[in-house]
Amino acid sequence: MTFGLGTVAALLFLISCGLCVYLINRTEKTIPPIQIHNTSDSLHDLTA
Image: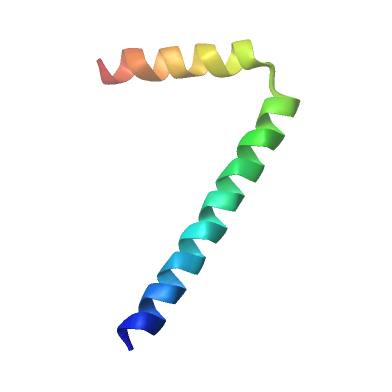
């Protein structure tokens, strides 16, 4: 039972990681890096 749950969790983790990398690669191609940098800066200002 524990082995089964661990396997499912590992698979879900790998799938989510793959999705994240895929989405990041897609947005980097469609959105200029400068725009992403500015967005992260404004988010940092909001949290600070």
